[in-house]
Length: 400
Image: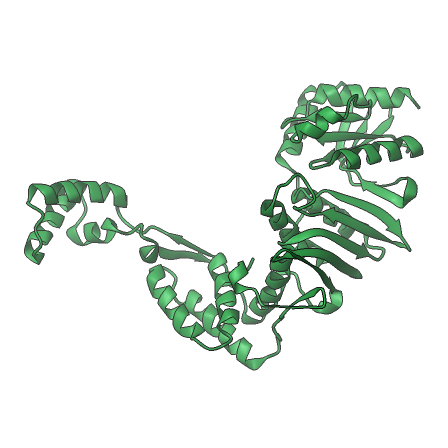
């Protein structure tokens, strides 16, 4: 994602608009190609050399922010590491001790003698000793890995990064979707949960409206939550018929930010398979080991229609020995009003199969404010306890 000093936006009449690149511009394509070539052709070379090459390619023109932004995205795809035969801190300790013993020689001959003595102790040659001495300095670390990106893809990635950098300042975000393929829709909700974004979803004219709270309105979590909103955007780009309206806080003023599929943003990653949170993976394992005999736990997304056109998307289905089923939804982040509304909707609808909410207890203040959790709510701190889920499933089934 682009940092704030690299942002290029227009602010006018209460709206904010990123200055997207024309991906068909020949000059932009040439500059992107030059930058990609620098990284590709300098594998194993020190970062200082790469930095110098990049600075020359960027230049000092009025549009240098664009090229710095492209370079930043390429640095994000690079891994630099220390390349030395011995750990630099170990080499420095030996060399500095020997230098003190030798009276801190300043001439080249004396310096070389110290390096040769140190090399003998460290069992490497003097040249390798000299290389290792400061090999951990940033400019001397070497390019060990570079995830190659085609120049055109880099230009598209730049435009997405601009939009993400604006969303980083979002106070709230509303997504509108037309009816979607069920697999893509489940993937979208998985990514909402992966990024731990609290959301409310409702039906609307054959599609869905997803309302996401931003960092200024939830838990005072600040920019860390804004990063998650920004990182979520690429998942949305895999769908069709979507639009976003966001409320942005910029320099203590509020702006509206809009984008949709006509903006031309393209995803830079292919959608991956099913994502499973660590606590859910552990829960699955423990259920297999300690779950009631004859019970099954299956990961299965299902859209549950609630009252007032609200919907929830479950994560699991539990099947008891008798064949009765209960849906489970894992709720990572929440506010008291959100959770109470979800419970009320479940009571109003009494869906069949019934639903149990498995809720993270990270937010203890709201947990305490929910005076008596109803049977269909199971709280967990970091580990989802199989026994608690079993009791909740039995409780909701007994009401049928």
